[in-house]
Amino acid sequence: MQAIGARIAVVVGARTVLRTVDGGASWSRDYSGPQSLHQVDFIDPDHGWAVGDTSLLRTVDGATWAAASEPIGAVLTEVHFVSVLVGYGLSGRSGGAPPSLFSTVDGGLHWRSLRSPVAPVAVTANSRQDLWLAGSDSLWRSRDGGATWKRRLAAVPAPSGSFAGSGYGARLQAAGAGNVWAEFDVGQGAASQRPWLLYGGGDGDQFECLAAFTGSCPQARADGSYPATVSAVSTTRAVLVENCPACSSPHGVVSVNLGGATQRLGQVAVYGPLSLSFGSPSTGYLLAQFRIDPIVPGSGQVIEITRDGGRTWITASFGTPAPHA
Image (tube, rainbow, N blue to C red; front, side):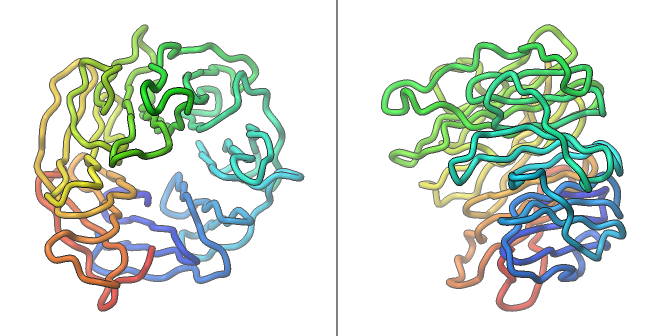
């Protein structure tokens, strides 16, 4: 899911693209095709890309989707654009192919390979020059569009105990002004627990470990035994929805701030938070498996909307049953 401002949001999923232009009051199905879509990236209301099982889709009007090009011999698994023309992508995290980093300067019509300092797990960018890359246990930054790299986070604690040797996966969100939010997780569960850590920082000398479920981050200030669903709100603030698969109670909504106090905002009555995106400091959209009160068999996923920064939430209406996103 991605919010583009307060009133526009796009959700991609199983052979589907859903879009609202009125703050969630109504939704259109803009794409119905043969492949499942796993990630969406918009730079403005008209220009967006969606990563599918077998191909990359592109829209130039916000509503009509068509196939875009992929790197030769590779299938993209993640893309992030900084303008209508310039973007970055990863490929090769499935099917046995080695992970690879690519860039495009024509909106995804052509791609070229970029040198990566590690096997890439996630990528994002604040601008054409300011590029961020995560390995399984490290975070790297390039200030020249990927020509050279500097390791910025070299102390991601390795999993221990039953998780030892498994390595971390990662998700990155560019926050602007040279900053980034980086969430690392172990990628496998045991006894309803999966260690994770959330870092924030960038232009300063230090990254802060702001939330975690692991003994390796003693300053952790959030709960949830599985990786939280996180959305950058500003260069210094992010909102997360805690994730506890074994819990039947509503999940906590938390504001984390660089160099400041963590604030517990409220709760949202969902099971299995999947994707969170704030289009403004007050308006955010959360995709989840289903609501806890009540659990309706076969109801599919739900979208929750907040208009007060995460304190209270309402459920978007799609009719019955809710569409699978």
